Structure formats: structure tokens, C-alpha cells
Amino acid sequence: MLRAGLIGFPNAGKTTLFQLLTSARDAARPQGKADANVGIARVPDARLDKFAAMFTPKKTTPAVVEFADMAAGARTGTAGLVDVVAYRTANALLHVVRAFRDPSVPHAKETIDPLRDARQMEEELVLADLGIAEKRLERLEKDLKKSASPELKKEQETLVRCRAALEEGRSLRTLGLTGDEAKRLSGFQFLSGKPLLIVLNLDEADVPQADGAVARYGLTDFLGHTGAAAVPVCARIELEIAQLEAADAAAFMADLGLTSSGLDRVIRAAYDLLGYLSFFTVGEDECRAWSIPRQTPAVEAAGEIHSDIARGFIRAEVVAGERLLARGSFAACREHAELRLEGKDYLVQDGDVINFRHAT
Image (cartoon, rainbow, N blue to C red; front, side, top):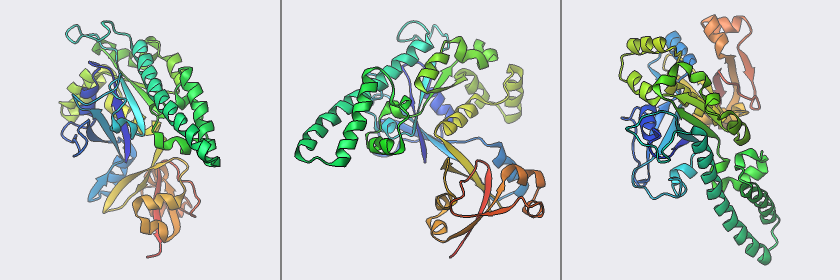
């Protein structure tokens, strides 16, 4: 399952956003993990909704993202995240940055400055990783004196490159590490190497100009230099929307000039940031969105459904989702030569609807 860790300084709205993303009631603290609350958010996808309307299945299953939010009182590092396992095992980090102005909720730094907070958190991530890199390099130096292993030497070279960047204050996500280099570092779970999404928590008065908020708060250059992305939301407004019936919520958003829920945009942005796409299996029993990394071959996508399907893979019947929705049936797509057969090495595309033929 895809995992995203929410980080942020006190009174930024992190826990409120977590509860909204996971609908609170879905949030649960797993046994043995007292340091974080974990909840599931469904990835909004209009295509899945349309497939469900077309096939009226017994069950509709969306793609999901797991969010982790530190529990109060957990053991932390300087930024409240360094020693928390839930963040190190996350596929991506979401930094909730305060931009709302509320005198009744004091900011730890006294003033509202999203760029300052974004920079400071980035520095904390870099410092945390630098400590880990230095410790591992010390150990490698001792191990290499005992045995000049080629693989250990390559690991040392990669870590030396990482240390140099970290000492310059640059995050590891900016290095463009190759597949082999990234694989060597995967066990360290470097925080600054994870994809980063800035969730800019706006003031209610800023909502009508939300699209320009990133530039207005001076974050454009920061995003460019760090390889991060950003989504502006207003947690206070989202809380009001969440308490309304669907029709009233739509009317409220229309009055504010919003075309979609901010929470939906955060979830969707987190999903895209992780480098994943969705393919679909559809029918009367179930319409389901499946999550896979981009550039995944068909046989591996089949394995997401069941290992037996991958093992007995014969062919994949594939049609682009928009063509199926436009034609209205598989038969019509077949008549127009839009339903095709693909082999194991076919790279699944976002929105593909697939039926896997396999030996039993």
C-alpha cells in the first residue's frame, strides 16, 4: 500500500488535515506503533465513478493512500519526526505549512512565514540524513579495511556523494540518483530523498485566490530548487465542507469558486507524487482501481491482482478507459478495433481497462 507521512511544525493544522483526509473514523493506531496514527484515504477518480455507473457492480473499490500522523507525546527528533518509524517507511512526505492567520492559535515563531517554515523543515530533513550517512560511512571504512568488497566500495562512493550534497544543505531528492544507486540507499530510508509535497494551509480569506498562493508566499523558487510540489488548501473550509450534505457542499464550493475539494486535490497530488498510476478491472461483480508504479509491465500488473494470474499470464485484453466510456461497451470497442491483445512486456498506461487471460 502507498504510504505518505504528514509532517509539520506545531499549530500548522497537520492533525486536522489528517483527520479530514482519512475521515477520522477510518483512522486507527496499529498495535505496536504508538508513535503514529494511521488512516486510509480513498483516491478520487472520476473514471472509476463512471465505470461504476456503466456496470452497476456489486462492489466498487478505489485506489487508496495510507497517511501517517505522529501521535501526541511520541519520541521525536528536533523537527518532531527524525526518529519516527512511520515517516522513514513512508513512500512520500507531506509537509503541512501554515499560512492561515489566527491570533487565538499562536505560531511557534510568532509570525506567519510559509517560506521560512518550508526551508527550516527541509534543513531538518537534511540534517537527519547527514547523521545517518556519516555513521554508515564510518562503519564502511572499517568494513572495507577487513574486506575490499566491490559492492561495499560502490555503496561508499554513493554515500560520499550523498554526504557532500547534504553538507551543502541539498536534499537527496535533488541528486537524480540512478536505479542502482537508489537501490543501494533504499535500506536507509533517507527522509530528504523522499518525494515532498508542501500542503499550504491557507487562511479563509485567501481561498478565492488559492491558485496564486504558492507564488504569493514566495515558494516558487523553493519548489524548483528542492524538487518538491505544492497544493494550497484551507483546512477550516474543508472542515465545513466535510460536515455538509453532498448537494450543499457542491453549492458551497461553487460560491467560493472551487471546482473540487481541496482534500481531493491533496490526495490526488500525493498519489501522483509517488509516481503511480491506476488501471482498472471492471464488470458486474466489481469495478476496481489498481495502483502500480509507472512503467510497470503487464505481467507485474497482473501480479497486483493475484500471483497466480501473473504466473499463468497468457495475454492482456486492454482498452483505454476513455474509449470504453465513449463507446459504452466492450463489444463496441471490439467492433472499432480499440480492444487489443498485449503481451507480458506491455507497459500499462494510466486509465487502461484490462482483462488478464491466464492459465489456471
